[in-house]
Length: 83
Image (cartoon, rainbow, N blue to C red):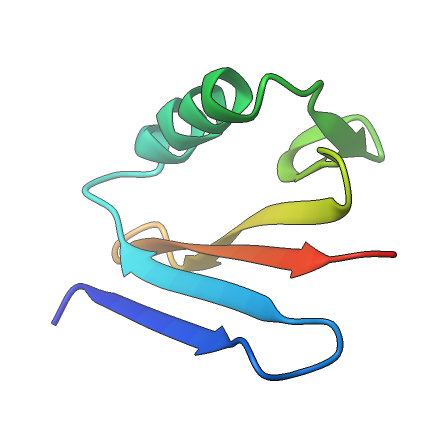
């Protein structure tokens, strides 16, 4: 009830998406920091804002975005393949 995982591996450019509830908005920053460490890639930000955030590890693109509301926050993490 708190997480949805979508995976499309048979496509020419496969993707995986995870959507999940988080306990509070500040948890999104913790998730972004964990992705920084796991990917060992510099986080890119858009328009000077930390979220949404993007990473570009070899042959992939990773996006982290907030979803939901302040009262019911969530995240969407999408990992895609790029040639």
